[in-house]
Image (cartoon, rainbow, N blue to C red):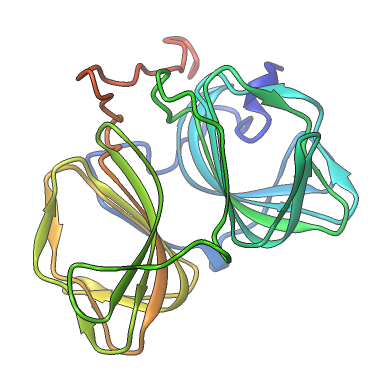
Length: 249
């Protein structure tokens, strides 16, 4: 098995693979799927590919579980949701945001167990900055409207990633997503004209979509924009599809 498909070997199954379509999931209601490593399970949110896939998943490590060293042919992005995630470079507590760029590798494990948001094969190859951000100690900045606070995590070309905190009753103006938008609700309830999304909800709004969001009770969300169907680098080049043409065969 290729070393960089450790989170995505599920035969020819695809989930929400059409990036032009809106997707909404209650991640906490999804079944856990086994991985090639004992004690590591996944909930697949979107996935496009065969043996190696462009994938977004919730990943759970049981205490003492580990993965063999593997290579990130299209990069890896992680938000630690619970517990402590580790590799040979360090330990990453809940709230840590990591980016392992294209071409990197590591041997991850968790002594006490952890739950992660993981995105694979979705980075621009020119985005070579490894990031480790402790979001519990970084500053919140004022948002564009009263009641909104933003904790920027990363920006490269068209891609922007942040945590956004909504005070109760905050309403944002209607806006569009020329490069798409992806949201994981971490706390509270996020809302727009299409529905209400409690903690654990995952949304993918496709390129060209728009909405009018608010939060009656308040919420905190992880949000990523400008990466659909692929990130555009500062030089105008599009991130290539790292999945081989025959990957789904």
